Length: 98
Image (cartoon, rainbow, N blue to C red; front, side, top):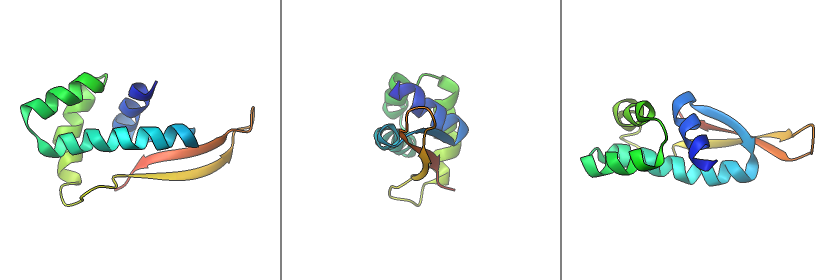
């Protein structure tokens, strides 16, 4: 489930999920972007082993890594959006910072 959410976040730039899941996905997504900043073949293979879509890995290495080249970390933002209507779970939006 976390691999799917990381893949969706990197593909679309934002996802809506529970706050607890957003906190877990944040660290994994930031590791994938850090691998993209490394740019080596072993880093690409490690990213391909985790992210489900090879096109998303290409996007990480080609678009996201240069975008965050000057940043040391903190590529994502969690914004709380209230409670889910059905069960009252705390929801959040996880998005990549521009």
